Image (tube, rainbow, N blue to C red; front, side, top):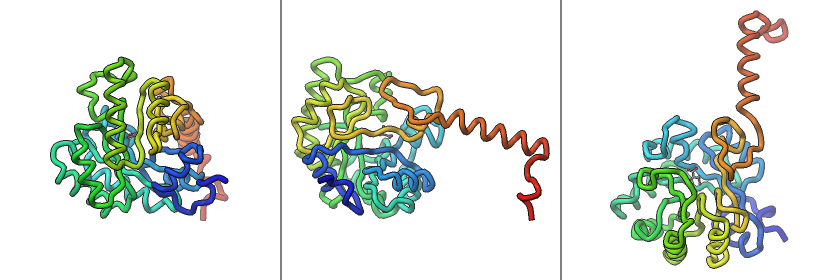
Length: 271
Ligand code: KIV
């Protein structure tokens, strides 16, 4: 029997049961009330208030500039819209790496001020102290390994990670450390499909992939990317379910034309 179809509210336990039951987990990013409401009503399992808001909402080149206050603003907008999905909120760059006490107080701010259900942190054994401390407050933590965009200046590029044996070995160790610390799930971004499958098979917690192949327990995409709003972004892993760039462009151009020609508003569109 399907686990996810029968739940009124998705929890971390539901995700674990879905993995045990062999049911794939669906996850999309969401940053605002109107979009999150549609995503939730469509039946998504998890909404990630990603720090990719820094790119797609604010127009920054990287995820580094977004602040804790801005993440809380986006997350609280999503929380007001959602009735069913589990809401995971990214901890932004600089809010958890240096000091585990600060990490805990920042995670508490996210939970208290946004009403989100869990936080996500990028990194492995180097941030384990922060993860363990956040968990002491009863805050569920999702991990994120592979291509971790907050470290883009260390990597230098957004190419596939962990292709070499050394990095793949480290990734497996990191994933095991995150599970042992108590993370409820891990995102694996842009790594070879075979490696991602190996991690998903060897861990009991759900593994959600983005650019990590089909052998994992679920998939996540950035909502603006899968809707085709940004027509300049087409990595191999991205399946576009729409071409909203074209559709929105046509709608805006039609509106402008109608206003300029006086066609809008017509007699039925006025009082
Ligand atoms: O911020 C984000 O959108 C993410 C996903 C790419 C997993 O972390």
